[in-house]
Image (cartoon, rainbow, N blue to C red; front, top):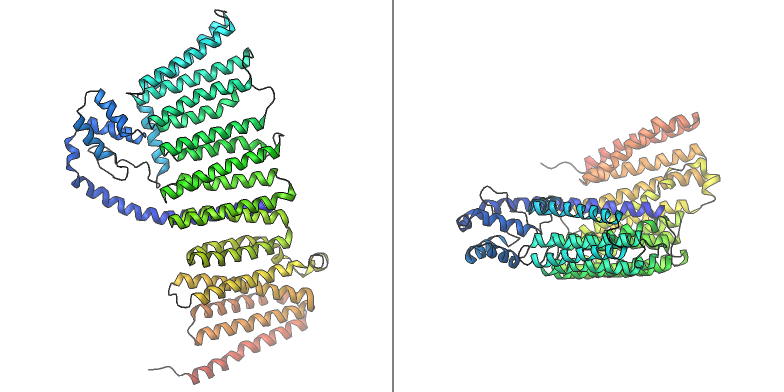
Length: 629
């Protein structure tokens, strides 16, 4: 549970940071796009000389993922002039240009990362509108075919073997029709291809479910081959819809085999081949979203095993998951390096791949091997982070891969340690990551983001902060590491604060100094709490310990206040003022009611004398340093 909370908090933290960074990028892009839209129509007057119907058709086909050759072939078959077609393709095929057409919305590039949801919805609407009568007819035909087969079965028109043969032949005919039609009309041919493959899947399912024809393996092979034909067509004719359709059909095929006993090892082996085929399609077509879709498929099939809904050979499945991880890791890494910062799908696949692997290891791997296995994979993702950053110079891929490595480090640590030892280990690991990250990358912004990892041990240390001296006998004596947790956290925060203060002496960036100031103030808060607990738990009685702690707080507050005042250090002066105010407030509102009369008298006398003595200190300081004219 500790690891899951830690991982969840870390992921949420990095998502928030990435969203903040992306908002800034989007604001800058919005300004650039407005200027582009304002200037582009004047530079492309030839757009308006082309027929509006031609421009609209080319624009729609490009949004649906069609390539220029297939669009040109279809238009020439319709009787359009080759010169007009080439000019329209030249004006609209560049996905980085934004051309404003008369009475038409501004096209959105397929590679534009700022509005992925709107882009997908526009593509879906355009796909539905294109040849919608044909799509509706294919759906009705599929339903009618099912009724016809059911009626023929019920009236024994043909025998079982003939019924199954008829269904497979009908599916094959539609696939052949699709390959013939797709040469000139991509959408129409794609509909026939998907229809034929679906008919074969349903026929084989009926053969297994009703007549027990075929074996589960042979039935799966037949269905898989039908989906391969759809995938080949998607590659040849560069059609995104066909590529996703083939993946969906291949994914649901195992559900139609009606196997008497579930063989999960064979199932995941089949899925591995499907994913390899998907990555092959991605490599040839550049449809990076298919990688994320393939990862979602593996996640869906993994859920029953991760949550214990089914029993299976965990060791064999874990080995297969290593294969999935390698495939997704290589695909996303090469995709990020090739496309730089224009591949959000690869970033999602990289992060999801690592998190899925961690879940499998934590849930399935033997306890004595968990930390070793996770550490080995952590090195793989850490090396990937370094190579991607060196190749692209982009920070987002670095954050994704480094985030996965850090989560793996936390998982390996939680597999070995618990309680105070776990909190101390997380503290030291977080500090080491911050320092190493700054040394390697020389970017204090990255170091600042990495330092947010300290929020995890800080959250885990809340129990140590909240326990009071009344729990000393039953709690603190039995676990002596609790005070050590606070001490190590305080020293770590102080150490990082002074380290970045030292290396930033010549840095004029205010945010840099604000960063190390926050670290130092956080470390001092832990020191004050540690002094309070130490005095009350170890050394003295309650009233005397309270008096000593309050006096220490007052002395520190006065020292910081006057040092900041005389040296014109605004932050230190405000820090001293805040510490004094909090200490006096605690004395008046809380501690005074818990002391006996003697303790009250001594405490108030001592603190009052300290505060009154500041008048002389300030007067002497002013006399020695008169203001200048």
